[in-house]
Length: 126
Image 1 (cartoon, rainbow, N blue to C red):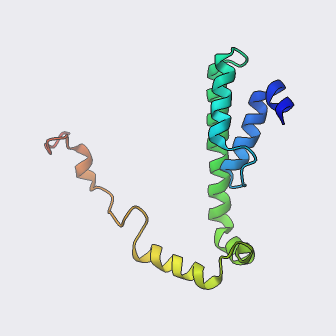
Image 2: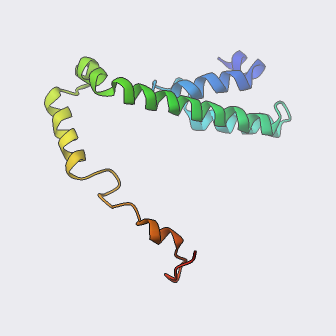
């Protein structure tokens, strides 16, 4: 692993961070990878801007994969494989009922469209 990080820091960081963001258990924590790329940039081993672009791309693409896998077959996958991690159909039904009764974000409603055109004092702006 050390050789990969020394010789191929950016591609290795991309793959490892992408896999973590896609929902797989991390081999190396993403925070550590970001710090490592920052250290490599400080040592002038990799260009800083390339490190930022690679890490951002890995994060966005990995999170997108996780979203689409969850959106496409999340419920089905949990029903099929959840028993291996302690998620039973009863637990899943209870969690779904809780989210239906009170949406994520504490149940707050999104702001009204006209509220988006107000400044900090509550005055309306066109």
